[in-house]
Image 1 (cartoon, helix red, strand yellow):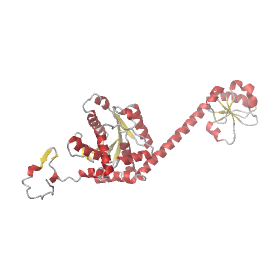
Image 2: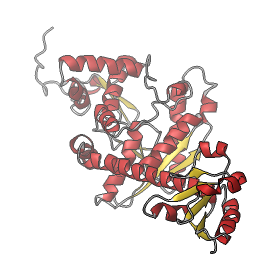
Image 3: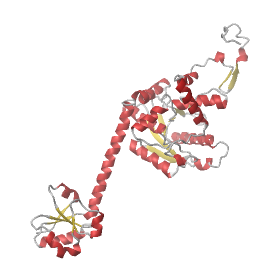
Image 4: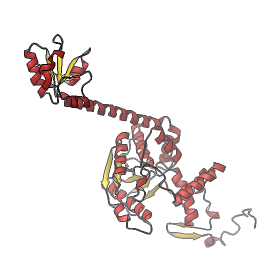
Length: 396
């Protein structure tokens, strides 16, 4: 007889129990071998040859296929139906690794599709409908737009990316999108978390580098303000370089009402986070906030439903909390968030009233306001307006 060769995968498909002998040392055999294999160290072949059933095919395994070929040729010359397993145990391990990767890819694809379906189905009212409503109500997307969807690595911006993908998938294709990630100096754990989530969710990100964290680290007075300004500028600049006319940020409904209240309590001013803005420093560029009407609690529910984990804060001063949460503790925003939560427990309409307060402004009842940098005061035309307005009904 002549020696025959067989691939590990082909051998696995053969029905019934196979006569497989692993020619490697007992020590290596104990570390792992093909299922059903027996150890027959090639150095003891002559003494142990009686263990081989000459009436059945014998399949030989070694490290690379070389020793099994040499031993198999000897057995074939003696009348055995001998097979050398091509590539040996290394080939079998590569096959197992390939299968493991394929399984992971299948699981990844299933998780991705589940996350996408949950946006359209499970959380349609909370996420999808409010995303579409913001786009329509505030006219955030126009024909021919090229939008840089800016991804920081947190739950908000990653959901925004998926919402844009679903928007394009479900019919609105009058625009282009670039999914833009800036690395301002993340630590390796944060950076890998962003890359991993983008891969898992199928978001084709474009990454560019900056050294913002190194620059801001030396700032003692207001590093957060400087960091935010610089990051915005870098995003605008890169987006414009890529041919975009808009950048999209992941601020949501809760960010809006917190900003309103923070301005009043800590800034002594009445203002809001606008759904869209023209850039002053980058002519022709615009900022849009498509998640303007989406509640943060619903974003968290979506992430938990899909077992997704995002970085909580990219800041170098809090990056040790990348996946543990709570990086806002002690901040003014955290205080306002807690205050709103308390008030909403007693009166659920509080949150929507804060949001509506900047839509229902009556200038006749405002002492002073600014527009285009010009300050207007109610006394400017108070005397001319005498008799045009009735008593407001308030008591002294």
